[in-house]
Image (cartoon, rainbow, N blue to C red; front, side):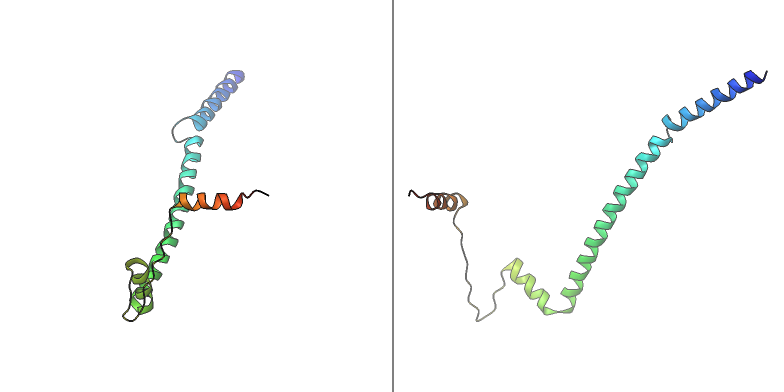
Length: 108
């Protein structure tokens, strides 16, 4: 009789362990969910830093003219009266590398 009880308990233990490791809600799913939470936490931190940087930009733009002027110069090409505009035009990349090649490879 004791032998049958022990066998039933061992079989029940094996069945529960199998369910724990393989079924839905088991250890595999827990590990998957932990990885997803870690990934989402990292993404949230990255977005919070981005939001803080954008909030600082908004504060600068609201409080001073220097930030507005700098942004207007960079993005819109602002030129104040009395300033001289200079535009530097670079040649194509292929022509620049072709011109550099013969200069560096000289014959002795």
